Image (cartoon, rainbow, N blue to C red; front, side, top):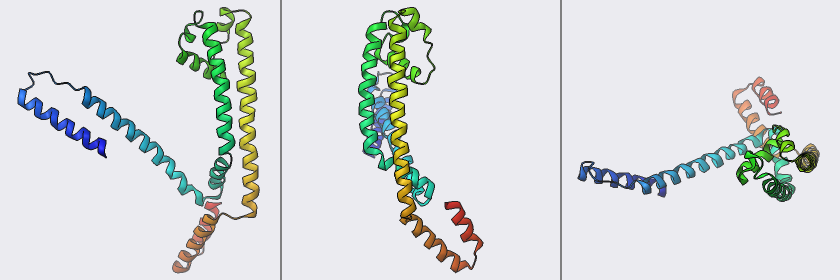
Length: 208
């Protein structure tokens, strides 16, 4: 809100300056552009986190609640996995950049090299460029990256998610979701007030 007021006052200042000079004096718009960019970035993050808050409404649905609880249960392992994957990725980033910076145009900068590595993980990169750049190091580094980053790391990621999902699912069978019980109680009361049974059956099927 403070940044919005800042941008509003800055626009008023520029408007008054323009009226005083009738547009014949140079007006520096650098500050106003900066304030507008800051406000745009903040609005973007607010929309992002606000959209994520919608997931809290999904806790009443058993299957969606199972998905959220799985992510919460695996959060610690996912953070450790992300840290490990970041180290592996940075190691290959420096390797590919130093080896092929002068041989492949797509590895001319660190950012472009990172993009190339992500394309390799998605199997969207033409490996013949590495072979043309170096007949031995190109295929060797490519095969090593595919083995470590794609097969090994992705297998670890899938294992973490699957194990967490299995544990959360077993716990959910023993303990019914408290939010789900509250919602069913509310709908039962609402059904008693209306005197309708079909509505309750439809809601139970929808939540399951």
